[in-house]
Image 1 (cartoon, rainbow, N blue to C red):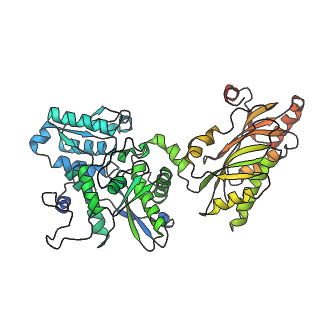
Image 2 (image 1 turned 135 degrees about the horizontal axis):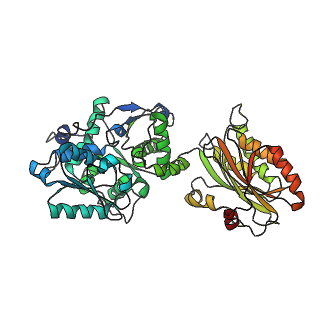
Image 3 (image 1 turned 30 degrees about the vertical axis):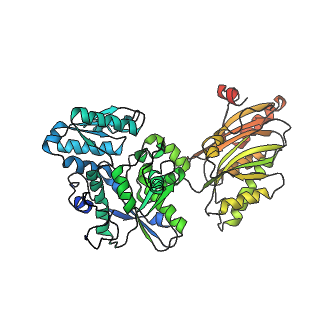
Length: 512
């Protein structure tokens, strides 16, 4: 928050206005180190490889604070500056997570009675030790409703309100992060780049409008910054101090979480990694050369229930597509062979299958159809590689691929609903099969199944790579009763662990 440019008349930064807070002085006098630590500024060698033009990224490790978040700084500075009589009357705060942790530790350290108002359904994320330090009251569906309740309690009970962001002492306490950065990296000319999530870009819209705007709803994925109106004092400062604002997608945030884990082996929450997502996007859009960036890792209080979604969306090398192929025996495996043969050709590697096919889904619609519809995901290594693979598929007669890599509807929903009940599929038997998961394992599995293609048609297929040591596939075969004995011999021959699910109630309910 220390921007270049001093007023030649006053000798003070131009944003320190008459009657306003002298933030430089307040930052230097902040009382945060009774509980907070001076966090390290660490290089990120793996992340640097993803940046253009020899740019370098440094990580300010606020996830190493006692509460795993920077919010402790501002909360403690505010509470520590209360008068003895204010401390005696107690405090009230509004918070959904990291600010709550900071208020709880600060209040316990200073011996202040604290009430924290949290939106409904958020208190379960709070650590047990924190729950013992403060009184937590769930109220309201979102932050704005909880904040109104906190204001009401402050007024009725005479408690001091500890706002999570719109308070000069909270701002000054958090500003000690910038002071620490400048101690390690002398920077006479600094750009301040704000980063916001799509659907929560309040600052960007407010700066464009020239005044604070209000959103009717916000992005719950980044709920720690998921407010509907930016603070008045925050906006006043940002108008003068923030040079640009970058907006990032949910997928870009998930990818940043994975990137940070690769460098630090620490798992950020979405809000904690949003700065890294912004730095990567900012450098890429500008094709930056020889620039240095500092990303503040704001917090690491990850909700464990989110890990599955983040893992699913964090692989920015995975690309999703829909493909139409001829509905005939052998075309299913032909599509797989086209992709793998092409990938082998364009990548100068000795491995037979350098890229994983991570998802493969098919369901026969009706006997006699000319086309089959496939959902397919592959991992790529180069920026433009996926588009070229799609083009290669489209060169083959009877095949047509559609790039769905950025289609939110397809990625979030339709990939899980593809197929469904067929109009007519006779003699279908359903099997769950397992095989050792390794590079090329799916190809070997399909080759083995291909041995049956002249006898029994594959009417259903579902595979998804989840990074486990076992590959799990659901396969439907059309097997006339007269072939039962021969088909049983075939299953014994292939040697995969197999369990028939033809009588399973879920299969009958959803797929027949």
